[in-house]
Image 1 (cartoon, rainbow, N blue to C red):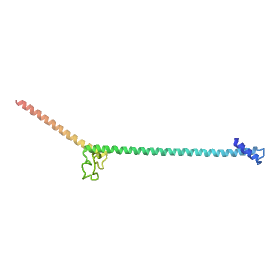
Image 2 (image 1 turned 30 degrees about the vertical axis):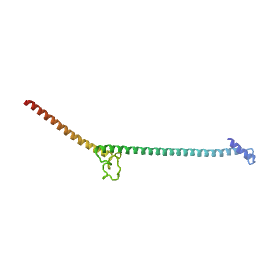
Image 3 (image 1 turned 180 degrees about the horizontal axis):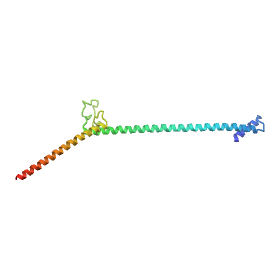
Image 4 (image 1 turned 135 degrees about the vertical axis):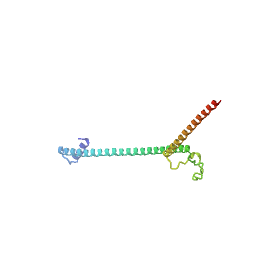
Length: 167
């Protein structure tokens, strides 16, 4: 029996509401006390579980916020990379500069070189495909030029040997 229980019973005895012989009453009070204590323990457990759930929810919300921030940074990085690739390939492939063609781009009257070239609706992949086609064309032209140079060298060698044979 706890000190509080003893105090509680003593108060009732002092007031004369309980006879000094209170063993049955003490047992009843102890039983009632224990039942109340069980309810308190049950409520404490429920409250602890609710607090844990709330903390878990806060952790999930915080993690969700951090993931959204990270996704935003990654999307920005992808856009910058895509723009950089588009500008680099667009310059190499001869896309029109904003600064050079004010008739086509009147929206940019003070365009400078740092504004880059106009790639239109293209994205890095479509400009890369355009660059690949251009590379294939240049390689085929280079192969023809090499063949032409080889034929010229061969013809020059024949002419040289003919000239030396006539001497």
